[in-house]
Length: 289
Image (cartoon, rainbow, N blue to C red; front, side, top):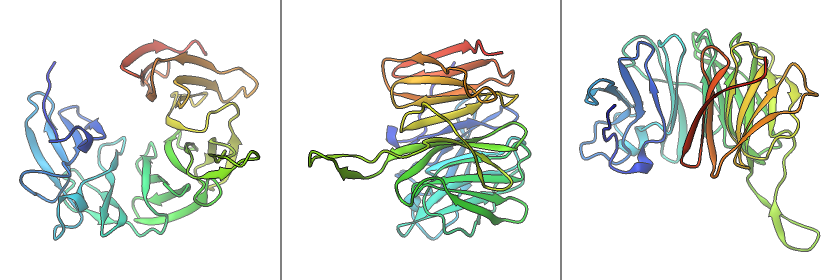
């Protein structure tokens, strides 16, 4: 329908999303803009591709690279925006509330650098996964940390992807794969293999309720069906898998791609999905019913 430039370098935009009304597209801000507006994100008119406005970064005294979002999430009701910005070698989790997203609030946390985040369906909680493998849930209204748990042994792997079920009761997390090499029996170096790269957590208590079997070490993306019965995952072996979480003994279904499978997402009907792998996007329907 249309194409427009949103950053000077292709690597400077790693995420996009529509606003709730579909009128605007949210993108990460340019890390190296010609004019430094100290922006964290940018709103674009979906119809024209023109800039609607810049979302102010949390550190107006700092240059663009300290304010631009690395990862962000928009709440389902469209009222809240959360993102991760970096300043002085540290990472900040920033929350914007209300319709205009003009007053950033830096959330207090010691969890480390966020690489994934998602709002609960009611928009009242924010789940954050970090490069150190910590899963944290914040209260949006109270703007405070509710709980933090290690998904893996400390610094063994990060939480690459996470998603709430539609009822908000559970969170699925997928790992980055092992972050460190270790010496093998033959004296050579091999990647660290982590336990439970794909897991499901109780969103209220922060306890792990299920370690999902037959998952690869690197889970790029996770998505729940609307009823919470099916969990779709984009995994490092170039496959997108669909698992019946309510029937753990059922074999997962899989779609193979010629390249890296970077994303999968269910449609609101919970049956249709879109999956991306290599240079191909596939729209299909899950045969699980």
